[in-house]
Image (cartoon, rainbow over all chains, first blue to last red; front, side, top):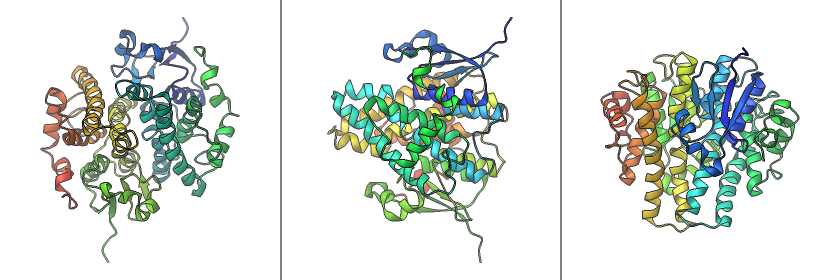
Length: 218
Length: 218
């Protein structure tokens, strides 16, 4: 019998699933994917709710059957259990800096622009497609502009957000930039972010995790 | 000359500042506080932007002068540098579980109900006070109801979210429940959360971190 694999329960277009795909690729962990079509609400169906009663993707099923939820908790788990390559610098101040960069995206952009929030703006709040796109771009642009400034000024910035190797912040940044395409939010005016984005996509771990390269992509 | 202290740059009513106050208290770290009145926009004034160009509280200034931002990154830093009492279980699966509980609040409730989001709903989106209160309560109620279910079903749940000692999840939960009071969002119908909340407030570390017990409380 074949060894049991990690199973990523997610969706090709979900940027939090994208984070976990990058992490698994970087650690060299083979995984299968099970897809839940978000537009159809499959993440709120009984199959998925049994894994994660929050009804939000992703969830990572370990070979032992244990299910982990919340992408940032999953990234920390993978880093703790598969030490190379490290997702965070060893020095606690530097690690806190990288975590702060990651959380600027994971807390202050992504959840505000998540599908269910955009859905609530439409119904019950009655906003137009244009107002919803403005909302999405507003939070993304405000936050990425200040992130650009931080990275531009920091001596830690290299080919990636911290040094020349990819880490926790890059796993949040690249999916966020890709996610912005849905509303034509671009980082062309933010040279540091643009450079890191383009460099990341030269690496198989990032390229292989792109939404369009997933088996469930339509 | 007296030893330099940690300085928490925040606001008494900010629930992310509240998280850091609990953490500092639990670790037994003395700290001073510098206040930025959010309603007046002082977190976007030049003094604060120099510490944190995101313009969001809190920021923790270390005795060496280094400034850390993002409350969840700060909690991890404090836990890495002051090992007792631990904020997370040692086992990676259990740690991921506690992180997931914490992030359900830190990612999926708090940022969506943050002051600047409520401000945007008012202007430019033109929503009434009632619609804004509904928004706040909707996200808090949806998420805390599923969190209640998780805690109710988990054998890990004790006097706190994980076992009988406070940890990372409790540092997010207690401030979120207190924050809900602003819009009369209560957890009276969620017995596990209510019990953990009431127990936490019997501890000096939590009681001393309450908004009303801060020097800048009005």
